[in-house]
Image (cartoon, rainbow, N blue to C red; front, side, top):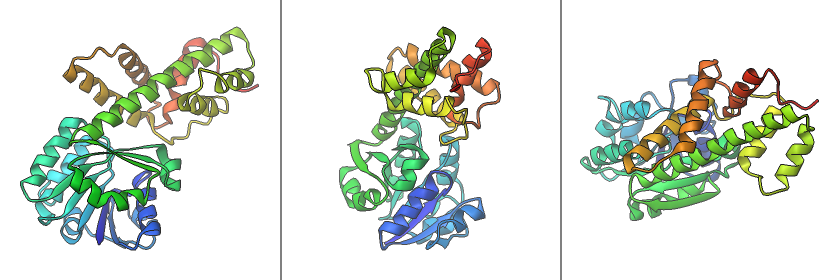
Length: 294
């Protein structure tokens, strides 16, 4: 099988390299950054979205924003105009459910199957192949592509029809970021009270307050290392989409809304390119104290 992979950056690159490493499929890549394509050793560098789309049996995209995904799919030289009937398009990006549904309708009209397959786990788990993939789409199409999805993940879960993959991803990320915001509050309470933050982290991580988000926050904040693994700008985008979904389905989301406002404040401080855990800097600036190990 010939696989195309469009968007081989921080997340797409490791996923693509795991396909190359763990399968015998021929892989063709395309990215605006030539260095990112060169980093996918063993793949052929494509010349355009159109060329990759026309040449491949399965085309993956891993792109930062829904608007970029739509431009790549709907553009005159894009995926929809160039993929052949009987092929499959798999989008690994994080979108609104309505975006996935629009893409699916356009591709189905051309005889192209589509799966939406957003991923969770961050760059480190993309590198080691342990990410979780939540897939929306036709079950037969999913089963046909399960082996290649399994080649770069630790868990592949079919969650329902098109739109449900995006729904699962947005809810998961809302929970993670809201938990992270609470972790930031807790650490700043600890700073103000004068407790040893290392001891506080040890207590929480061994108790009922433990979570992956708390661990991530303490690992980053206590050392002051906010180099992006998952950029705050991307977290803001995902949480904004989650709030739109809450509006669409009529569910109150006060915790999600509060966390989104915290991310807005962080972005106003120029923290968008930093790791999402840099949201704690908003508290640190307002309190005039940092949550660091002594």
